[in-house]
Image (tube, rainbow, N blue to C red):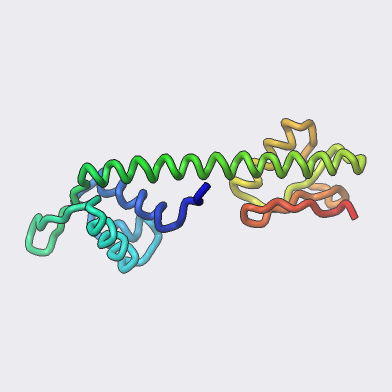
Length: 157
């Protein structure tokens, strides 16, 4: 499966923001997306070139962005791709954590600690609970270490 890129996520976010407020300006879009105005400008030019967005002049210095039917179709496809990518990541992470939990059990432990935070750490916690493994803060037990989207098992040496 092709992964969802940052560019696709930004385009999806831009299309959603423009759909919510066609009078939004590039500075506001940049703030909402957490990127530079130049990045927004570059993405808008790409969306215009794809026929997904049209621009009209609302006032002398004010632009209005209009999502075309092609843009609505693109937004829908990008949203579906994002959800599919997220679910695939969720399933893979759960499977890896189940494998690590099985290693923990084989080593004679019934608890682990989780090092890291965020969505992947939350998936680890839920999977441990589901598998009957207690999550503790004790440094004397094996640890599931979250590194980005990876989960490593440490402390079974």
